[in-house]
Length: 445
Image (cartoon, rainbow, N blue to C red; front, top):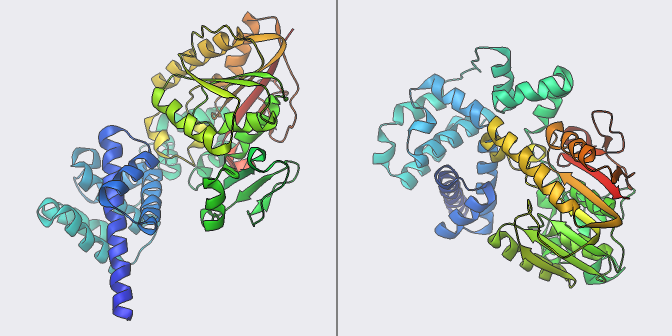
């Protein structure tokens, strides 16, 4: 019986490794996000939920430590991961993660290597056997040419981004910001009043947050058991990051309001707004992507939202005959606040991409503001921690639009804004244990 159990365990580990290698290959080949690539690979290989869970861990953590792992691999061989086939480079990175970060022993590593030969084929791996052996047998140290490169390898970020964060926050606080991205953030779930009125569903959800009704924190994703997952499927509870939940509370739509939700997909915020409105009023949700809006429609049906209509449109030039009491703008951003949650994003961001995002953010904020009625509010939020996407964008807007003024926020549970904007609200992963985030609320005179 013990042999059967051991065989089943090894088979599961091999299948998990196969899914992880395939997912990392999809990420490199098609620039897919971690979760999209994982689900595509799992469908291809018919993986079980347990196999997918282990593959998810391998992918997320390998991507999280990617530049440091590549540095180690290059030290022990001439095999630069970006120069070898996607499947092989994915496996070499996984192997380096298991050895140097997970600290797997040599016997376990040999079982992983044996599984990789079955998955990729021994002929494919044959010319990389020396590299594989060196990864297992050697113990390289981080090699860097300057302090910034060393910090980039130690904290696993791009060097240009390390320079920006250290200049922005100072070395001590900056390193705290960067190091916090080396581990995932907790999961937050909120009660959905659209499904249960004022009655909370029974069950244990984790740690109840003080001051914010109906929100729980789960430090370990495995705390989200079958009972909670059933409640998620039926829409009774919603998985949504704490900082994002706060932005909906700050926007504070009331029953009967007209609301414009800009860049609305995937739909968590729309559902939250509808709940705050008790499904009374009107929400127009805009997104530029037809595919994302299709997902948005599924989400709002799941949570029981009945007052929202979706519209495919470019948010930089909104041609709507619609004037709202509440406008919520959550434009595309650098995602620097979610590097702990989605580590692949940190390898895709570049200075030029950041500048293009800032231009778009200014355009979206300006276009959205045209649909705020007199006396109405405009809430601008991003999952970025960079002032150039936050305080500087809003300051640029205010100087061009004197009919808007800064509004105090309730609740205020984050940190104050930078550049002297104390009424703006910020969240930092290393301080607030959630995604990094920014919220500004304005009112039109």
